[in-house]
Figure (cartoon, helix red, strand yellow):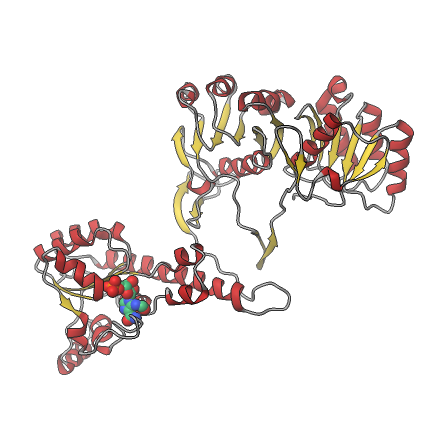
Length: 525
Ligand SMILES: NC(=O)c1ncn([C@@H]2O[C@H](COP(=O)(O)O)[C@@H](O)[C@H]2O)c1NC=O
């Protein structure tokens, strides 16, 4: 279908950015502007003639702005289908002039909720008239162009210069507009559902999420799968700034998220190196370079082509270490002067930065066929401070000594580190640690005894002796601990709770190995 010239526009925007430029462009193109309250005042102040909407409706804006544009003279002007002679005739009979362009953006409901406003203040920010106009204009896209974002004002100027939006452009704008109101309503409905639905089980009857496309990825997990990245606008990895390197792939995102999860569990400077969503090294250190060196030493073979997360700004010393190893991605809250330049020496490394890494919403969602599972996120409360002190719900002071002598301070700090770190390893997970660094990790096995074997084998005879072990869940049999004990592990931390705990405790006692029960497990599938 052909272009439709823009002769009359309705403008009603909460976000006034770019409004003056838009108004000037409309005026220069000879477009009549009708507008609401403070939008009209802003337009007028820029010297552009504007008709207040009250003049059109013959009705004053009232109820603190709850009623401004909710009027047949507005909505008939938006909804008349210019292709239908009957609509054109009816407008003429009613003395209503049609609109060709509607520019609306909505009250900031999400931002108001996030600001900690009272329920009444949040409810007042639910836009009613705005979405009505947006939906009406989007429905009538064969006639009307709908613009919901200041980002599209440049397109309006271009359309004015070229004789109007084409049908395809109006249809595209309509799709954007319906996505905008759907996202807005999902936010409002989720807020109501979680704040007021009154379910006795504590779970809202409705969960709504809206994501906006942020990037088309080269492919998905495999080259034959198409993929894209969508964001919820809350920041995090999906919004991280890329400072260097090739574009992020689907697998890069998955692995980088796993790396962030692993590194940001620790309070001390920490580095996690991930391959295929599992850590091949996690370590804390006095500084970030030391943490990286220790994490890398855990499994240098697997660290090749890995994804690295640091929970502190990357120093030049760390960057120099990283630059020696082929690395897919590095992500950190910042980079000290000169560190990026050192890393850039590697052409392909993707360098990411974000201020808010490690902050996840309290609930997480996983898709299954026909639905989604929603659970509260597994949190780690055990925090190892620089002086080795541990605080929080996974605090060793809450653990039960099940076998052997109480651990000395250094051993207890290592157990706490291992316990915190094993949370980031896919189940069944066994993590061996020494001096604040993993030395052997057994991950993702379908039985715990194989994970023990793998961890011991990865650590090697020398490093396993005198190390400590953490198991993400209880040992169902004494065979797993038997492998760890025989290899020379000096202390073990595990949740406990198996019907055969006695056998495991006996094995530890017999070998003089310290064993703690945490009472908490950290499965990660
Ligand atoms: N109630 C109405 O009739 C109504 N019509 C438009 N609005 C909103 O009012 C805002 C613009 O108002 P103002 O021009 O006064 O700043 C826009 O965000 C628009 O979405 C309305 N406000 C809320 O529903």
